Image (tube, rainbow, N blue to C red; front, side, top):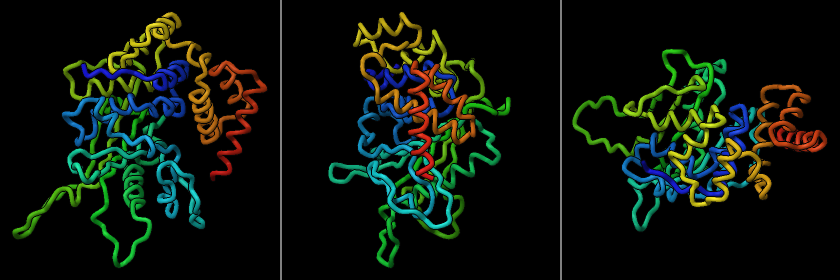
Length: 334
């Protein structure tokens, strides 16, 4: 199997995920790890077929990674290389991409020119949020494509537009017959009248990938198409106790750090060893994600405080401070 050497950052994120209930907010933290991204991208991005996961990690541009980037008109082009938004479009509700980044497109790049793919990953708790996820995905793709042009004039070069991917990972509320399935949607040249030559790269600019999970146990067979993608995501989106790291370790190898690895196994899912060794940044990402998700779902403040205490091993006073901090941040972003 194409196994990656795991970093401390990835292990820290997996520690947080292993102790959570598997809501999309907690799962977002582990998706920020490049090792995790490489496993997903290898399975769903056609441009990466034939490339190792290690090579795919090299394609990902570190300085382009951005979380909660605005989707709304007038804002999608204001966060470049992780910068904060500076402009607001009047009277329009602000929506956010969950997690966006750029990665090299090896098919179109050469020694002189680098062409990128623009990737948006959207972990979703529900496949049925009250509207078709597919339509929202296409909307996000359109905005992501448009954001590449800051100002359209008579001299705009549309030839610079680069392909966009929107990858939706849906966890719950999947119809029984659609559980553990993956759908791909893209632009195609469906008909030509007369003699003409259409170059695919000129219109192949958007691809939507919808991944449907559905239940905590995955019973797929290794011979099934998409088996490794679905098995890996099942472990992350429905964190298990004992088998969680066993499954993840089939794809990401943490054995180089024998001492830490032993602690992981002794605690059935990473315990608190990483947090005690200074992984505050990873923990803060998890805390922020939990508070933001609970606010979006209108979960009572008291319940959020209890969850913060239980999941992160902090006092009630600390939990309240974190809640107020990220509640204020979320309200300011609206």
